[in-house]
Amino acid sequence: MSTTTLQDHEQIRHETLRIGGRKVSTTRSIDVLNPFNGERVGTVPMATVERVREAMDIGHAYRSSLSRYERAAILSRAGLLLRSRADEASTLITLESGLCKKDSMYEIGRVCDVLEFGAKEALRDDGQVFSCDLTPHGKQRKVITLREPLQGVITAITPFNHPMNQVAHKVVPSIATNNRMILKPSEKVPLSAYYFADLLYEAGLPPEMLQVVTGDPREIADELITHPHVDLISFTGGVAIGKYIAQKAGYRRIVLELGGNDPLIVMDDADLDRATDLAVQGSYKNSGQRCTAVKRMLVHQAVAAEFTERLVAKTQAWRHGNPMDKQNDMGTVIDEGAARLFQARVKEAVAKGARLLCGNQRKGALYAPTVLDNVRPEMTLVREETFGPVSPVITFANIDEAIAISNGTAFGLSSGICTDSLEYATRFAKELVVGTVNLWEVPGYRIELTPFGGIKDSGLGYKEGVQEAMKSFTNGKTFTLPW
Image 1: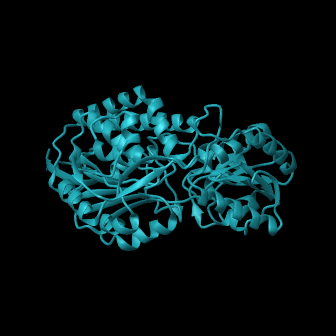
Image 2: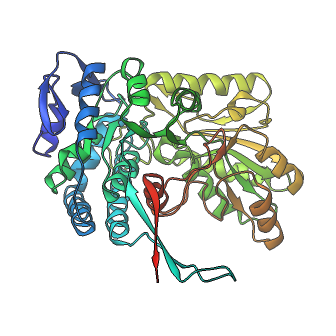
Image 3: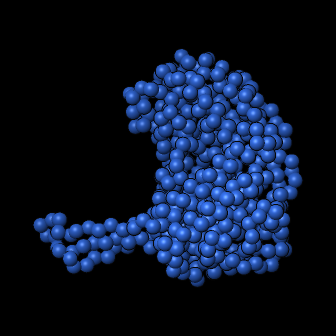
């Protein structure tokens, strides 16, 4: 595809697949459906293993000679193009994902930030200089460090919940470091990935540096993971698949950004109006489909009743419905199956003693924002990652109990803290076993440049974010010389 209008992307057909910037014939396709009304948004190719191998060969054979300036210019131009087409691009995200227009427009802004940060980081010299005469037996020499692109290809696999921003967080650092990438976006939301790739090609990116392959992961995922040309696998998605990749990848680098079960912890000194604002935003933005969404609300028992009352009122005011209605605060979840799962987990929690205060209503993939209290940590709803707009309230008696409950799951991604006590904040920062602690913010707060990632079942501790990803995507080399 050589153009980037929404009409073109709505009419993607199965006859073509982009391999190394050219179109090749294929006879199988995947329909992309609108979660709100079930209508077909478009179709994308269903690649075979042979097509994946061809893409790998093309990527591996190519060596980019783009200068830092040229890479930065491509990323900057792509950012300008995307800003000028923000409404069109956000509409595509909304049509294929069910995210409301407010959320998809916000996502476009984040993608533009990734492009801008990537352009700036591409210009930054990433080397260091060390003097060697620092010890009694030192010499008059210098050590210079360099970072070089990988020798092989990067495989990137992205999920459905941020259709374009998750893609950008892998593609932009790859371009900034002069690498070659094979991208497999989620088969549920592939159109945004194609749109983003087209913007980059229009901005001057050699197509061999980024190839988009769409297909059934059960058929092509192993080839993407184990092909001899692959040097690094960057994956964002579920824990089970992440652990499968780790087992299958062999002697290759892997960067895994997996699930979360992030708490918002509300202490007895918290401003409850401010805390409940964070609670609803953290639970319901992006339809609750973020690894860093508020999945558990841990509330001090002294303020739990008042907190919950305010939370219910703000939840009931959260407008949800047709994702294309710009007045709505929330659209659908990704599909009806996901909505059914949330509904079932809430019903299970209620059967075990939780109290449903509002929500848990479903129509297809449209699922109402939901609040429960009397939730206990062992319930499936909060023991596992519930990837949707559900607000379970768990009470605690003191900070020791809050820390124990927070750390009591398999996950360790992020957290949000509501307190004005320096003593409390310091203890949380030191004792929560997570990758991020945000004081008076939702767990998901970050900027696109900064390190992001978790530990335990939330990832291997390697970070995403533009700077950290660029480090992951390069090989270090040292050069010494007399001085």
